[in-house]
Amino acid sequence: MKTFASDISEALIQRLKEKGIESQIVKRFIKDLIYAFGSHPEITPFELDSYLHRLGWNDVNLDYQTYQLAKACFEDSDLKNSMML
Image (cartoon, rainbow, N blue to C red; front, side, top):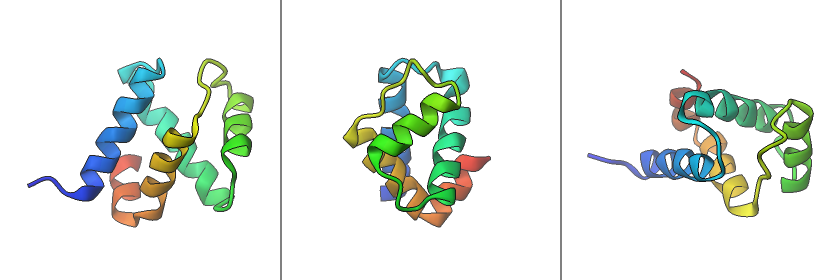
């Protein structure tokens, strides 16, 4: 049975793929997102986008919807742990 948390993670993964992140590197990108939220829980969408660009994710522009999905994943500890694998 699907849970709300799995729906969020699937939505985030699908959104990232639509933004041009290849399936093979989605997990790496998500780990960078989770690390950013862990280091700076109050990070704004603009700050997060800038941080990701400094890490080399120049081809991805983070929009507000993707930011909200990533934040929801970080705030759910079970989901965060499952995405870090």
